[in-house]
Amino acid sequence: MTASHLAFYTAHGISPVRQDISDWERHQQRRSALYRQLGILPSYLKGRSVLEVGPGSGHNALYTASLDPARFVLVEGNTTGIGHIRALFADHPRIAVPEIVGSRIEDFRTAEPFDFVFCEGLLSGVPNPDAVLTRLADCTAVGGLLVVTCVDHLSHFPETLRRLLAQRIVDPADPVEVQAAAILPMVEPHLATLGGMNRRRDDWVIDNLIHPGSIIPLINLPEAISVLASRFDFMASAPHFVTDWRWYKSITGADHEFNLPAIEQYWLNAHNLLDHRFTLPPRPVEANQRLYDLCTRARALVESYETTRRDGFIAEFVEVLDDIVADVREFSHPTAEALAEAAGLVRAAPDIGATAAAARFGALFGRGQQYLSLSRRR
Image (cartoon, rainbow, N blue to C red; front, side):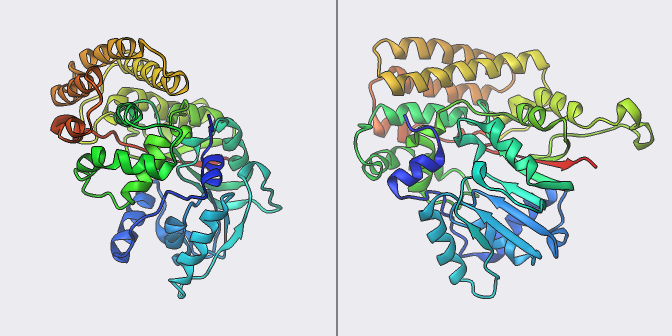
């Protein structure tokens, strides 16, 4: 199994991360809202040095370039993606074209670290996220800001279920375009429930339900913070779930600590990552860790199924899924009913029409990527 975004994209000559930004003002609003949640006013980038790693087809980079950084470097190892970036900037001639480096981040070196380093959507598709985080940290200047995204086993669990249902109706030996065409009618009614989605539907299917790197183990926000904790402090997140009620005058000495409070609040609120429709009160850390472990086990079973296509898988998977439904029913009845409907689809013979028509499960999506900004200590 190919286990990285770059290897998969390169092997198939694709860059399945394209966005519809024909409404430029709306795109600017989305990106500026994200930056604000992460503690970055757009004006902060003017005249600064910026690095973006894994920009894909360049749609987010286009907005960043419009903020007039003094130096802007894109590191992208996918030649198809680089072609898309050049074409996109050619369509927007008033925005300066950044420096584009065709490289993996593991091989990229810079004499001068950057004030801002952005890496979106990469850590969820590499087998070595700790090593990638370390390289990103090395590229961030002292006093600078690093922004990464995490996708975890709770926020991605609805996609884990869709992936299983999709994999049961396709032949993995078929070209990715053929597989995507078969899956799209099954999930298109689901995607229609996401009002803010501006990504191409076929790209979303390839990236989430076909690409092998999307079913490997993921890195969650506490794990990412822990990797960087010796050099970086938590700044903010999107969703913006960390609230710090400490008096600023007391945040000194041994209490001058920002990473541990963020990790604690993540686990208190982790159940809110499962269903984007609801924001629920905090839950005991142990309960959320138990739920996370169940989702991790279910995900590992799906990964194993894709590798072996073994008999007897369904019974084992549904047993774990039933435990997840029982746990979720303790805090969100609508979410539990959506998961129960998915369990019924898994138990039954593969049926594209039945999955497409599953209204309760169809509206269930997690909170996807969690953005994390961290400041490098002086």
